[in-house]
Amino acid sequence: MRNNIAFVLIIISLICLFPGLTWDLLTIEVGTTLPLIGEVNLYTATRSIMTTIKELYANDNAIVGFLILLFSVLIPIFKAVSLLVVLFAKNWNGRKKLHQFINLISKWSMADVFVVGVFLAFLATKSNKDIHAEIHEGFYYFLAYCIISILAGQLIQIEDDISDKT
Image (cartoon, rainbow, N blue to C red; front, side, top):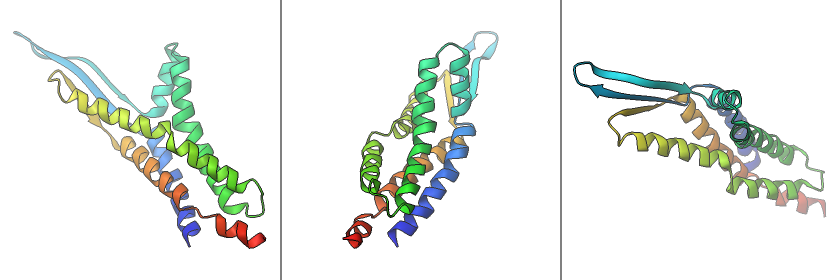
């Protein structure tokens, strides 16, 4: 029963991951108030995770772009596919080790850190009257992915399957 729930959660997490990566995550507006002119907008940017990665590569920040790609896109997809392998490859001897590895990397998941970082950036801008930040739907989808994928990984039960072979 737990593995069935884990399977559904893995699928839901993957469904949440796509809009979490491609939909707008955060808008930041920087402005000021000038005498005689009034409010002036100096900078506005709205980004998704994928547009951020593309922009970092375009602006010669390939290392940062690669790290965001690795920890926010590639590892989450690897984790989901690996969890599906753990669920369905019941006769594979490396199944338990793969599950342990997934649990290990889940504890150090940079995707989760990324969500917290975006949220802290959002809160930090609230303390400055010249900076306005707005969190968009992509943030909530990515947050949902993080929470649901962690829950799915914790629910998978493989000990019973292995002990049945002996």
